[in-house]
Image (cartoon, rainbow, N blue to C red; front, side, top):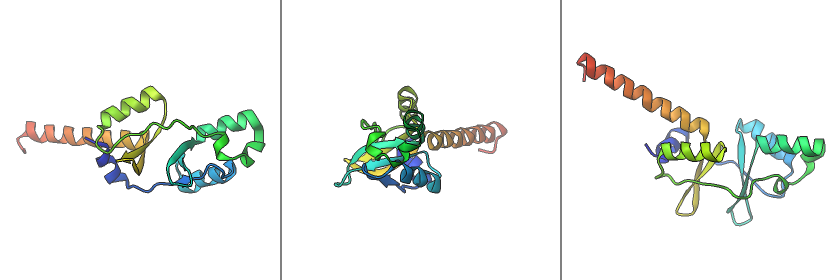
Length: 144
């Protein structure tokens, strides 16, 4: 299965922020949208970074409550790994596991088309396994 299938099930809503936004605003954005990370885009709409709940917690540990007024650019991860809709779910799982990150932008011909999380990927894999098991049960019982 491919990343495109995960996006099809999940939808392609993309929540973004700007590098100059205060961390406090982004924390609220994460809370309201019930998400774990936000892509940071520049004035041209290109990916400048990503900021996650983990980044904010690390910032709080280092800077205290003052972090809430700091700009996103001070905490965001600048080197953002991405995938394509044609990448396999298995390869993306491996990439996320080895890179130790939970959110991955999906780019198609350089254009942002979605963001997937490790939760989206795991949910998709579980659905695949469930369908496989049901198909095998049907085959063994003669229903297929």
